[in-house]
Amino acid sequence: MTPPGRADPTGPVPPPLWLLVMITISGTMAMHMFVPALPVAARGLAASAGEMQMAISIYIIGLAVGQLFYGPLSDALGRRPLLIAGLALYAVGSVAAALAPGLRTLLAARLVQALGGCAGLALGRAIVRDTTQPESAVRQLALLNLMIMVGPGLAPMVGGALSSTLGWRAIFVLLAAAGALTLWFTWRLLPETSRPSGQVGVRPLLRDYRALVTSPRFAGLALGGGCATTSVYAFLAAAPFIFVNELHQPVHLVGVYTGMMVLGMAVGNALTGRLSRVLNADRLLRIGNTLSLASAIVLIGIVLAHRLSVPNAIGLVLLFTCGCGMASPAALAKAVGVEPRLVGSAAGLYGFSQMAIGAGCTALAALGSDPALSATAVMVGATAFSQLAFTVALRRERAAGAL
Image 1 (cartoon, rainbow, N blue to C red):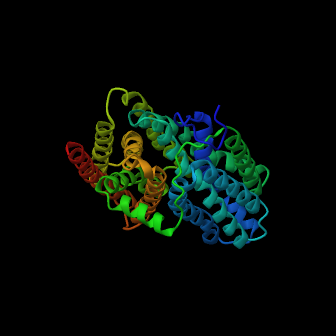
Image 2 (cartoon, rainbow, N blue to C red):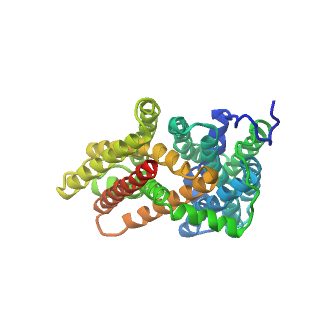
Image 3 (cartoon, one colour):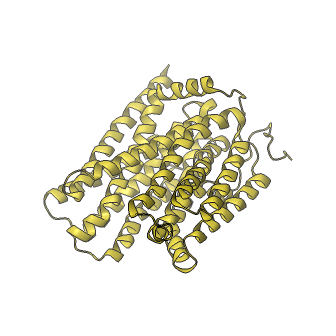
């Protein structure tokens, strides 16, 4: 039996799926769980609503930037030690947030928490690619994404219940306990799944990222995958204004509607898990993104015709997210497999591009006086760009294979 921390000479041993879910979900749970408690925390720390929203913004920044470092460092030093360090940092940041006496301390603690939590996002995906063959990586990533969808869906409800009964600090106590438990299981059960190069330094890091950024295949898959999977953030960010101001729905139903729309992502992941047995990743990529693009075009047509309603908005966005759920695992699996020696770097850069594109789509949706038109225009533009980026990447792949 290969002891933890030492690579198996016969090949990497796949860790349990439940452990990968715990590892990957930790980073996003901390972001979603604290959202309902923002007003309560603002009163407790004598902060304004805008100042308290920085606790979410700075967390997203930490998640995005941190992945750029964990990926290449894990290629050099191994997945296991970087993941253990990240989870330890996450637990420490959670404890510091729970004890924060003021806003500045809370923001610093949130940044530490994010820089630790993003290790799971980047390295969980890399571990899947390390331990599966290319043809089964899509199915494994789809299954992992499907399991992970449950966390962000339940996190706001848990956060709201905790903040209303035990106070907002209880959220960080729970996150610290979850981080410590995940750290313990990782220490005991996760073997090293990569073959570390041992090359650490700024020059190797820049060299590896340059190789990926200048690769048309990786750039097409990363940019296309980011646009395909996070462009829905544009509609979700505008949803409160669309449903309440334009469709005259009560505020308490907005969460229900957005939850129903995001459900499509889980459906798409489930379909990918089944269809990957009969369809290759290229076809899943095209089918999923085409479904999203077609749904977005129909939706913007309805908005322009002033025929938007609750049923057609939910139905079409659900189809859109279903397409996202199909394209996302295929794009990710192909992107991290472009250069086998840079799986960690590719996973980190892919995760960064997703976060950055999601933030950009959200910002663009805020432009203009019509939230529905702005959001749907972003969705159409992003998925059309995805289609182009995927086409370029797949053509380059076929050309390389023909050589």
